Image (cartoon, rainbow over all chains, first blue to last red; front, side, top):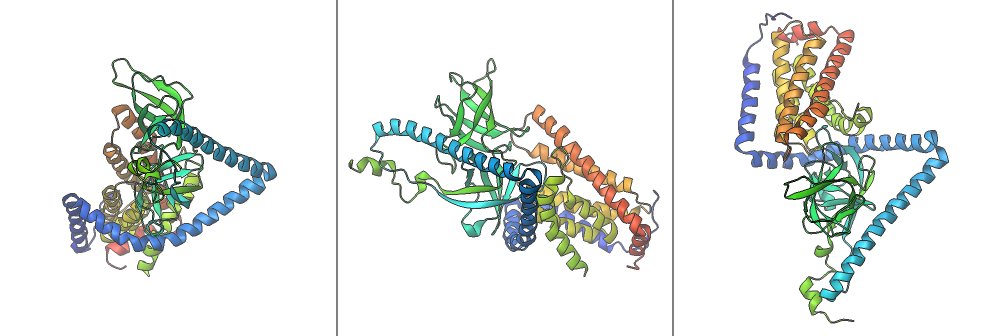
Length: 293
Length: 169
């Protein structure tokens, strides 16, 4: 390598440097305003990008479907997939029924629990993964125009997938339950001990801040506690595979195997209103006032 | 014409990066095509175009990622600017020099991202650096060098750059 003898004017270089410096100063002085402005400007870009994104995602899905259904294992694959879906659905049902039964036992004694409304959900298709390697996210083909907003919970019939962190008009980014930046309030179904579920760098999840006196064990199922965020109570998160109890620590933690294989998820449901926010459901005070049927 | 090319490039980068590249990832690591594109544009079109296209790529990709917007803007814009300087100051740019520059920028950007992660302790951060940041930096460098090598087989790149520098293009 040697230095070029360029006769070019320095104007372009100065403009470029000035633009870059101005950008850096603006970002650090007014981070929220710049973020807001770019997010606003990103709306039409989201619409424009959606066209090639959905087209390529459709081609990609089509090729993957053809490969899996016809080339790899013709009939067996399809049947297996159907059965797996059925098992996932039944697991989800089973988990929710167990949770409902436990909740009913406790709540009927406290208040006249009459009716539990189902949360409102929107179905969406996964059309991509995070643009970087540093975050575990999926991109959905529905956004603000479909009523999706940041912090909404995302699930499949089997359990929790993650939560929405970013939206444009027609797409949204979901931070998966296996990402270390995610935090969901969890509950050990058998012992009723609560904790916070976070992702790990290795692509699993862990339940943190479990009380020291908790009698949890391997194989215990962890569900959403419904206390924080937009997840209703009782959605399956994962199964405990390893307990970490350190001497002198204030809490114990446990490794979880997520119930949903987030690497292969293709369709999801976005929870728009939880049990507590549904129009059909009254508050606890309302329920107490209502007479028994 | 150039604007149209950049527009199509930016629009196609998102589906390429988010939909197709996951299939081509090695050990779950995929290269950052935005970084490579910004570097090549900076190298051949100059620092201003490199910066502007890099910023646009960073901004559009950040709409489809959970990552920080500022980091995406600074990384992609910065590489466009740097590559523009490299193209103007160094007469004999090789695949290795471009790959080395991409590796360094990707490494610095990855380290910033790791530091920016909330609640990571030292072992977790080190795990992230050695299993994501370093492999991705190597991958980015290799892909950038590969693209440059492919282009150099097809076009007379030195002449292209010299014409731009001397104002013929």
